[in-house]
Length: 484
Image (cartoon, rainbow, N blue to C red; front, side, top):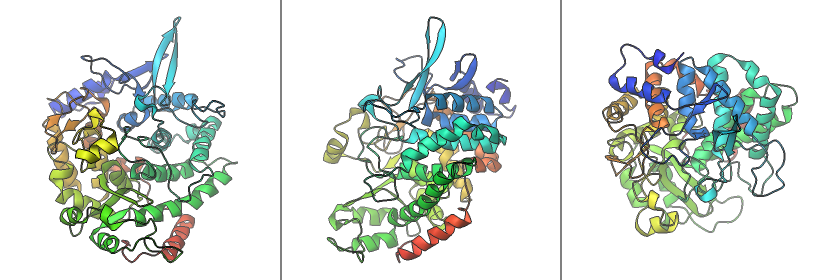
């Protein structure tokens, strides 16, 4: 069955053309569909846009699952698992055991096809993808939920693959936080943007992958990993909900922090210096009932930028409390021009500008202010916005965003991203016919039309035994300004 066969006679021109464009992006390996290229723009040099990126494929995979094309997702999961290194690397320049590649492409030699994986060794700045293995687990879980095919996840090689990923995530380390310590550029924001350490996006994906792994590791011999997950989940959940949260009450508390505190009674645990926070800008920007998770927390650091992936996925994955989820959606509604504007949706806000831009990005010409990852607008984020809106029963926000996108995306030939404070300019270096732009739009519309699909990417309440530990931790580290 072709993707074009899945269209409805009631589909708009934009939806019809989106399905036609998506059909052209499918990659075949040994006669089987195994993924989608990043972009199908024949007017420019392919570079690495002719590869299938794990994070890019997420929205493609979900729309395939919703439309009964689970075979593509199954093939993708099987083939990418084969690319995962199973032995310890003796060379520090080689990918470590358990990593899932950033991308892969189909090559041919002497009439024989093979897959070539890129773990970041060919990428710009040689960035190692931390998020690939986390998204891979989430896609495996989505496949199981959509198809009821538990046999795939139960296969020994899949159980071992999950274990190897968890070994990386839960390994002994120098760090003493429950969060995941990562280098800069290790996620969707894959260029230098000052998000090294414990960036929100990866903490939320880490949390979701832990939840998914706990459901999937059902075979004997995995008890040690399940126990480790149960130990980490409540600490991670409470840590993010407490220390990353910003609303007007929390801002007031931080504003009055004392610094250089020592000992167990310290309130300013990360030694945040008052003068490093743009209080007066935040005071104007934060709605009374709005709030969001900060971009990063670390020693003497509170990155107060709004990052869309982390905040939206915090709602979708049930990391955010109900109160926090509503506050995030209120912020998006009240600051619509800043965060959505004329093209959904800003990957972060505000942009790094002037001297800060030069220092933090290294004068990256692609990350000029209000472009690309420095506060550019990315249509793929629509599906996350739609999922979060459904979860919080704020669907009018997602519908409004979809209508804005539908009026432009097709005519603009599905660009990768948009530039400008309101997203009015097609990205200076944006590829046309970007696959996750197409699938982000289709998936957002499909989720809105069929909210019953949401369980593919949501989790609900934590297991009772984990909840009890989370409650113990939150009570032990109670913060009067933390939303309950």
